[in-house]
Length: 400
Image 1 (cartoon, rainbow, N blue to C red):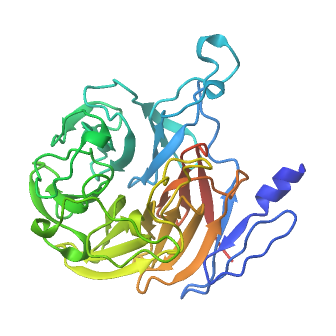
Image 2: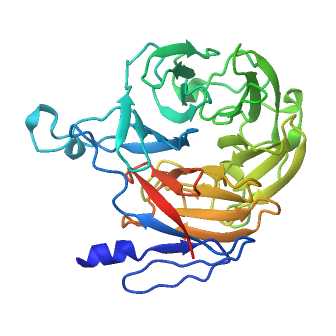
Image 3: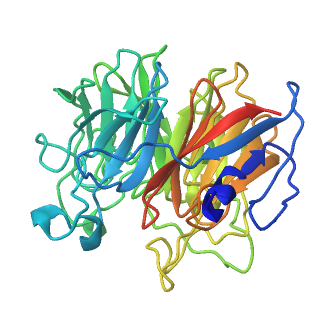
């Protein structure tokens, strides 16, 4: 067996309080004991299967697991390089731009694939989030001015446009207005469903700094709030001030952009990714502040030069996205940290870190600018990477 295959097959992560173990053909090992015993994750280095039709694997900006445990991804074409799509025109053997929506089965085979720029009027210019509801409709949003949410059947037939669009102008010309709920000028970076209540949650937090809730069927505004649960009338429209990065982010009342997610739990809470402050804020579904969890707060969260990638413009903030575990009690939170290239595993009750896996790199089981994380009903974890990571990985849950 080749050395790289031995290395890949030996990658094991166990949820828990971490003791990292390095060996020539292994990666960090973390352990914890849960009520059901140890949970172990092994990366599957051969999942998914090679994409058909010479399609390129692009920036995997978001992942959603539907009710049938199929894995849907946004395969964002943004920043595909020439050598990655060199088969266009036959210059080299591989590849060509792939569709921007791809559905995989559990074996990693492509089931459906469609979408891309100009696929329909209103297709997002900068894809960011995908969701699949109980009726198997596919919702897609984007995060540039003029973007919104568009809704499709599984096969890519257009169904509806959420609307609430702002003008298509340069992002640096968009002004905050945290009181206007009819126009979302910076697009819709993220969303999630509460289908029992027929509601959709949106962290409007790349230009504004608030969480909004709309009706899933009528697209009418219902309620919203700012950091620490303050009403929208008290959310200011001023730039977020810098902080002394030699210390920790301040525990400020106003949200600090960027807000990257708002995920409701089964027991009535909403978990908001506040990347600009390295923390998760927890609310009731009515917007009452409950508590907060700080995640690796020594990570620089915002400021000049943050966010674009590269030596002079590194990533920042530790909360890119999160998913709640799929056990009945949703005991754990899995946090995608694209700056430290880690998945942090938190006890959902108290926010304590009970495990982690990843680490910067391109080998199977390592991560490079992770931006999305999801879990299926079997407890398998999926991670998506953007920037120049450009892949999805599956971490298989096994008993130990």
